[in-house]
Length: 337
Image (cartoon, rainbow, N blue to C red; front, side):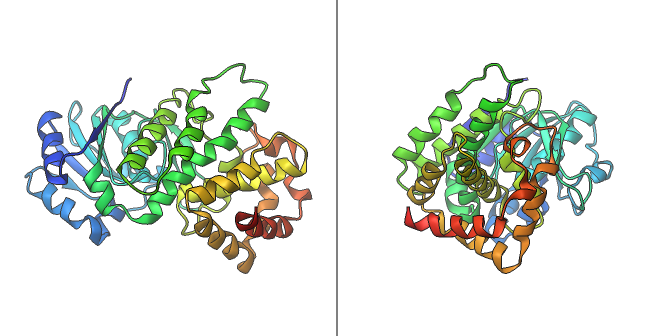
């Protein structure tokens, strides 16, 4: 099933009105986090004016809770406004209930919004798992909405999600089960970084397009976009850091280890890219926290998080690494290279 990407420069209210009318929307689902954020209250107020039924899930969006959410009737169309967790959750429910989804992005924090798989925790104490789901019919990105209302942390997350694909690229190259793959989306990352001029409409459009290109790669599973950097993210999923920031931290960690073990790596390039995108300080603060809270010790388990998904941790034993020294070196090198 093909998912259309629609990027609009129309004002927020006009964009929402157009979606509701043109897509023949029967109801609206808003994420609980988005609902509680004051910056998004104008969107919620406008949605209510549509007179359509609005649902805000009031429970943790885990796979164990999908029976708590039921679409009212098969064959209908629903507008979903929220972040990656809500989109993943409703995609699973949409496949079960045989309804269609139209997504209005509240952020650019991940690349799974148009894929045919969803990543959710089985329950609140588990790692994220992949589940087959129904991709949306269309994904709308309203530029004025994202420019004005999207918090900075989601901008950093989008950049992190994109940069982390450079580590996926290296893992795909060493996976003997992967004979060939479309490398074009990976090559486009470098062009984006070279042309990057800060948070503006041009950069926003390019991030959306590139994340979309990775999203549609995930036709059978998420292995094209999720490798050894995601093992790191799973270990730290209980932190307050965004998904995109965590996978970029995981990519930096993986590339650092590649350089030590004389494997092909892009570690220095990643450091330079982080400075170019002005996100080095955001990352350093998270690494600082790992040292202060002693959570760096979790990385001893990297080789055992997801051994079935081939990547760096199948080649390197994570229990043999002095992780405190590694993290301190990354902290320093984010600035001095």
